[in-house]
Structure formats: C-alpha cells, structure tokens
Length: 157
Image (cartoon, rainbow, N blue to C red):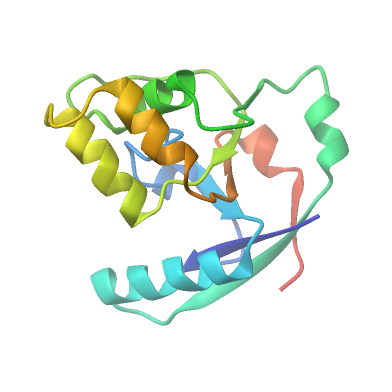
C-alpha cells in the first residue's frame, strides 16, 4: 500500500526524535492513505513553520502488521477507547507513553480537534463526543513510533 506524509521540509531519513510530542497517537512519524490529507498537512506546516509544502510517498507492506515481534494498536472505528487514547496522548501534563510500534486508526482533523476541545472543556460528555465523531467520514492515520516500525517503510517519492 502507498502511504503519504505531508511536510514543510524534505528529508531522506526518518528520525522519530524530531517528531512533535503529544500527537494523537503519540510521538512518531504519521502518514495517511489519502494524498489530499497529506497535501493539506504539508500546507498547514508550511503556513505555521515556513518552508515548502512537500508530500512524500512511502511503500508499506501491510503483511508486517502480522509480525509477532511488532506491537500494533489498531482502532477500527471511533470509540471511547480511541478517544481516551488520543486524549491521553495529547495531554501535556500527563506525560503518557505507550509501548506500541505502530498505531493505526481514524484521523483527527481540525474539525475533530474542535470537538475534542469541547469535550475537554466540559461542554459535551464522552457519549456525545463519540456520537458526533461517528457521523464523520474519517480516514486512517498510521503512526510509526519506533525505529523497527520505520524500517518497514520504503520511500518511493
């Protein structure tokens, strides 16, 4: 399968230590199945940090997800567990760390982030958050969080 990464600066080697902390699935290298999402992310990063919008393409063999030596967390849909995982990862005060090599699940975009912020502020309860999120068509994001996981990606463009 082809996965896309939107960035504001080109690079050849993936260095997870340069990833931002407190992202939805933890500190890692995030990709998407949808090129348009990667384009939007590249433009967003360019507006925020300068540089040039770039979309990198990677070949990823999904067979590695069945490798017993990899610890993979797969959220197949919006759920309370998915939302709680994201909330823990985004919490700067909590210093939450998990031990997954790869996390796959629905993407949180700006509109979803708005709803999560409403939940965190107490404006809506978890049940309402999940109901609102289930109505959205979300693509999957893939977060590669260890050097071992990154080794399964092959840059093709």
